[in-house]
Amino acid sequence: MSFWRFILSRYFLKQLVLAASLSIVIVWVVLKVLDVYTLHGRRIEVPDLESHLLGEAKDMLLEKRLRYVVNDSIFNSSREPGSIAMQDPAPGTEVKRNRTVYLTTVAVLPEMVPMPDLTDLSRRQAMSLLETHGLTVGRIEYRPDIARNAVLEQKYKDGIIEPGSPVAKGTSIDLVLGEGLGENIAIVPFVIGLSPAEAARTLISASLNVGREIFMGDSTDNARVYIQEPDAVNEPIYLQAGSSVDLFYRSADVFDFEAYIEKILSVPIPYVVGKTPDEVRIMLENKKLEVGREVFEDGATRENAIATRQEPEYETGVIIPRGQEVNIWYEPAEEFDIDDLNDLFE
Image (cartoon, rainbow, N blue to C red; front, side, top):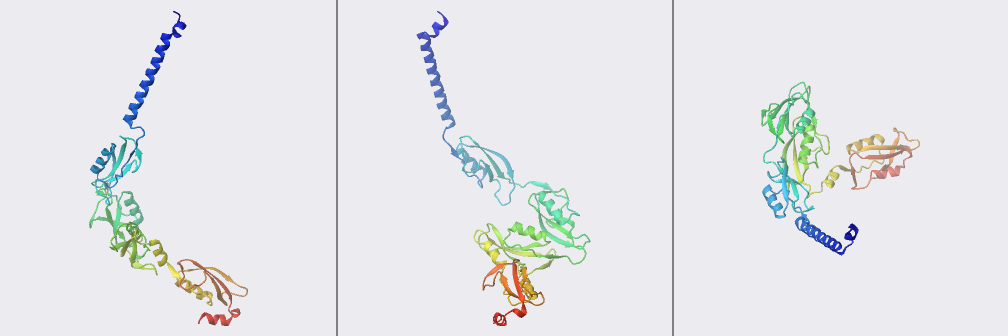
């Protein structure tokens, strides 16, 4: 029988159809088995594991048929040791069964770092180097020394800590600084609205220490400075370097700090109409405002002028931010209506 006759024979065609049908069945069965094995079309939502202990997180993942790998750990004194700090994929992500979830835990013991040598560095250099090593500045004190703000000693728990000594990350290191020649005075910075850490860093940068810390109210979450003593709001306050500033906190979750700060940093609009340029300047300086544009009408000079208009205009009870400029228009005093002038002082 020739090749082509065999190819076109009924026997061959029957065997070909049978083989094709069998192949289709095998492929269909394989696909169905794969669907069952991989749970095709079914997704699992990754649970929120953060703040749970590792054992609890393990049980939650096994219950959802997910795997896990602890790939890192960090030290965080504000969180429970052994708890989950971060996870990948994030909570709520939909994945397939047996997907691996990578976990970062809170270390039980803090990471140890070598104490840097801060001696003879400036205060700013010392702060920067401590931050690089994961350490913070504790209290600062001053001693008589010609090198002002240079580090004379580095201390931990009232004792000298030698360079290279192992110390836990996050530890506060006290600094003894040179007082320099003459009086070492620091101006108290405005720290209202800052977090405890931000306020401490700001005060230390100004050569001052954090004094008493008092939390007002029940909640300590999202704390911000509500009151500082001495109060640096109304006038500049100068203290001996190394002095302490007491801080009172409230929670920003229950208190509107934005409106509060806007209010305490604002002053009533002064009424300067009828005043000379020098009187206007003094009034604005006393209110912590700036003299803006001064317009002298024809014939008006700084010696004979009197204010006839201001912007913003005066309104009873209206306040404006400190530092804002007030624009003034002047006319010659002799051209100002005396009746209008008398009305100003009634």
